Image 1: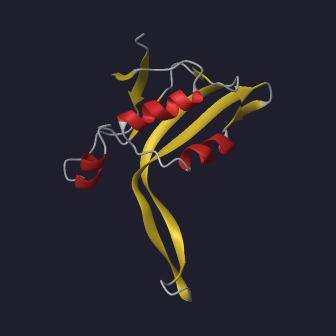
Image 2 (image 1 turned 90 degrees about the horizontal axis):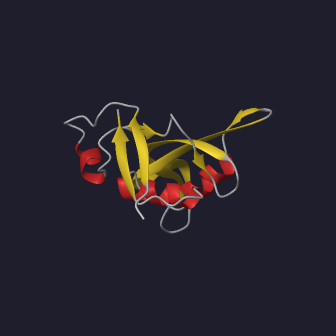
Length: 135
């Protein structure tokens, strides 16, 4: 059965000279999200979700021989990783589900339409088959 995930473009479209993003992502916009409705999560919470891309980095503290570096360096471990921002509301206020966000970041999703769909399907009680953008 066909189930459509509707996303809004919330940032600007990819710039023509932003070659890395245009090659690594088919999203077409720097930030997309679910704003006019929520996703009912498997854990019972209703989520509003925002997505973007970033380069996931890690600190390199040791050289290849295992000797500690005097000045640690950052290194990119995944270009164009999927950044997800979750929001839910309960009787006490509006919150982010930081544990869920961390678990999803550790799965190394990319900022692509396919991985956004996988990520949402991991959270959602309903399973979506495709993405469409709304204005």
